[in-house]
Amino acid sequence: MADSLPLKNLTVEDARARILAGASRLGVETVAVEHSLGRILAAPVTATRAQPPFDASAMDGWAIRRADYQPGKPFAVVGESAAGKAFPRAVQAGEAVRIFTGAPVPAGADLVVIQEEAVRDGDTVRFEAGEAPRSNIRPAGGDFQAGDVLLAEGVVIDPWRLSLVASAGLAEVPVARRPRVAILATGDELVPPGQAPRPDQIFESGSFSLAALVEAWGGEAFRLSAQGDDAGAIAAAVSSCLSQEGPIQADLIVTIGGASVGDHDLVKPALKTLGLDLVVETVAVRPGKPTWSGTLADGRRVLGLPGNPASALVCAELFLKPLLAALSGGDPEVRLSAARLVAPLSATGPREHWMRARLAIDAEGRLTASAFPDQDSSLIGVFSQAEALLRRRPGAPAALAGDTVEVLPLRRG
Image 1 (cartoon, helix red, strand yellow):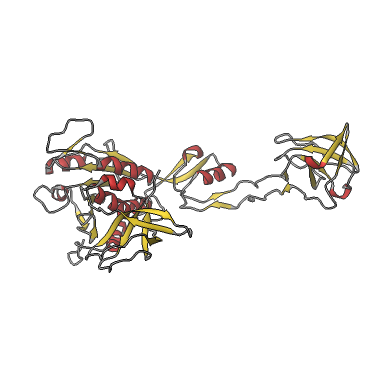
Image 2 (tube, one colour):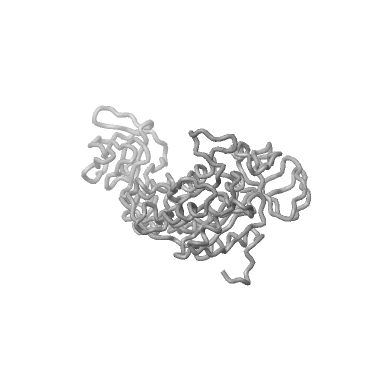
């Protein structure tokens, strides 16, 4: 990074732009359609045939020629058409074919009289469907035609789109390769859950939540063993993710903690030995000022998140999520929603503030937001209840109840 470019106290937008610079889809792989849920399409999905591929009955009833229809007129029952078992010939004048929902409409027939309006008497059936009954026929290609583009490149396959892919007859689809993310928590104070901590230690939790977020956001997460305040051990842990012969071969390294300016903040000095080139050193954001980013000598990206859980999770939403989207060929845009403030908020300071908040719908159907009273960056319990991040811009004046605020809804479940 050129020395002339400032690295410290960047705005959220500037920091995100630098973190995303040059980020693009890492590669393409083909997966079975049943394994495509949540993946990002790497090419458009095109229909191989029409859907439905034939005129299909929309109801259970009787297929006849509309030109023959007269209320009360008897028709000869000549067979039936069921799903997967079409009537084998064209319907002639005065004939009726018993038909079921989804079954092919026989050639010659252009009207399905529903069964509730039919009276069968042995080998004949008559109808009382009024003078101009509905056709109750789904036309061939009514959903889509062969050659139609059903899904564009870059969309995420959700359960509804997965159904569309399968209905197009595709057994496999090309999707973006999932970014491989190695997560390293640091600090002498950390001990894994389940072990007995000393009185001066805490349970390490950040890597668990970040790994879950990475998976939810389309990446593959690999939790490395937490390292103490030892620059050599930190560098070695990261090095293990860089070798082409190693078990992980990460595309992105995410570190937690060790990113401020204290004597024990050793992550950046440790990674300098691996050729770290910083593009972001600090961000003018609250919480999360120590957030940083850069690249290693081999071009591998590194995102450093603060050790306080709320800081790490806020900055993961602001920077990690869009970066994973860009590396997957998706849309990295961070989109905010407007909400009405429930309770007043004091003026903000010089840093942009992202507050944990609840969301609700008021009596008029409008989205409302209420910030939690305690926004301390160490409070995991508050984050576990939050449904959104409420954005307060730098130097914003006090906000009153009823004012419009920006919120970033959080994915819960």
